[in-house]
Length: 89
Image (cartoon, rainbow, N blue to C red):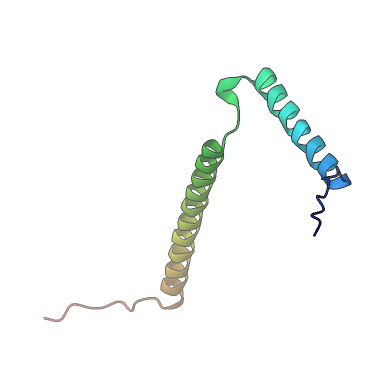
């Protein structure tokens, strides 16, 4: 019996992954140098911005719903004016 050991070869995908990894590292370092540590985008910052955007959308939607309800009520009141009632007595 003979055990054949395969030599790991460097393929095109390995090179592509290496180049992509190096590019990400360069971009990260460049961003840190240009923007500064305090202003770098983070996952937490992105999540907070998304939460704030969702809240703002919900507020605008609620305001629009309120305005539509007011317009519908005003239109219904205009379509069915109340009769003048005379006091009994």
